[in-house]
Amino acid sequence: MKRLGRDAAELTALADHLTAHGLILEMLVGPLPGIYDPTGPGTLLFAFFAAMAETERENIGESTLEGLDMAARKGKHGGRPPVVTDDMLHTVLRRRADGESVEQIQPDLIIPTGKRKGRNPSVASLYRALAEHAKRTAYPEAIEAAHADFVALQAGELPSPRATDAGQRAVNR
Image 1 (cartoon, rainbow, N blue to C red):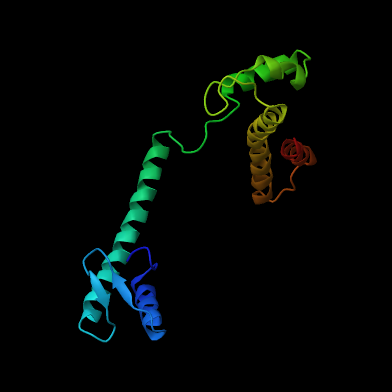
Image 2: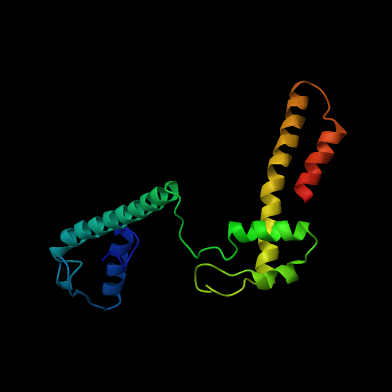
């Protein structure tokens, strides 16, 4: 029953709709095996089990969210492992600082885990990782500049153009 509808009211309405159109709802397994008759004595029992199915669905959803939250607190996240690891990113940053291009660095890198283990990451993946790294490192500067502007405004002063420009430069990187 919990797969037929989202809640007890929807499940009861669906059963009534099917019966009104001449279809017979028959429970094959579960607590109410047999034919459902909306006019018979099974109506109250059907409504009770529909409410129980709704409660079970809600409990499953809550348990799932609790499990995901617990895993996140332990540092475990679902999904595919990242193609570009922190070690790879540091290698790319160091070698780019030495003047090498991403295209020159890419063949020397090997994906350590996942579906593409043992292969080279794509150039696009490396550029994406570099862009994400730039956002992560620029963000604290932008917050600092915005905080300085906020403090200046609270003090009744106009923010200095230099602080605003620094914050804008950090956001634009």
